[in-house]
View 1: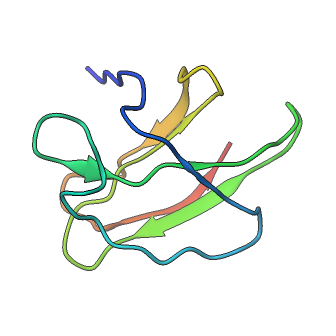
View 2: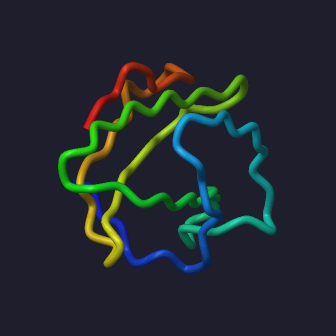
Length: 90
């Protein structure tokens, strides 16, 4: 079962086509279970195709895409031990 509550903090504006490098810390957004996340937002039309590649060297990555109301449109956790979500298109 996968449950996402509404974002508990704001998001950072993202420009499609750019690369973001970041790090997670206790000052980031929190799921409330001890895990943290970075939230990014961008504008797109309903027909826009999006490919997101996410990787981390030290932890399992999990990616979810929501609409402006916080409804989950898609998510990917490739497996329990890999640190890379790649080739995911919505």
